[in-house]
Length: 206
View 1 (tube, rainbow, N blue to C red):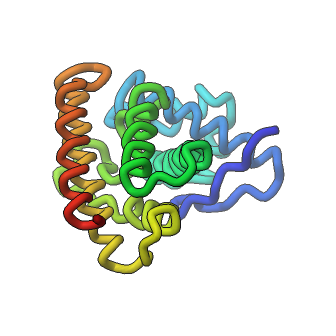
View 2 (cartoon, rainbow, N blue to C red):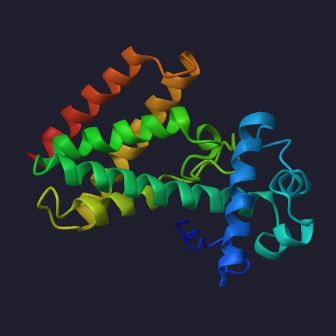
């Protein structure tokens, strides 16, 4: 059974019927594939429509431009990432923030390596891709606060949000560096990132 696409803030109109939701899924899948093939600058709504096998009007029914489409893909990525981390922590059982940190970083790396379009837009903090004035990862930090506060037995307050925002920004920068150095992510840089995060979170959360 197909999972419904979560409603993204960039959608002009949320899908109501199953057929409309399936069409939106095809559009976002096509967008992700084309991002990997041609990059963000050469991405176009017309090319996405052709790849998805839908009329161009169907794309514009949901999105006014390619940035809104990429942002909806980023929102879907965040939903899928959340599901993956949640499932991993269910099987891991109790383990505290170290287990949670490994789950978050490992699932992020897995999506970076395998999810179409993820290497460019991930959770949308750098849309348009390459922007020098990228938004911080507030959306990701907020989601992690919601998801992990109970698991690590901490209040989901502003202190925890700030801690996760710093950790996410640090991980984001170093993981991007690792993938610039090597196509699948330089393992030594990734391990240095993991140690840095452990040291920071140990000081704040222990």
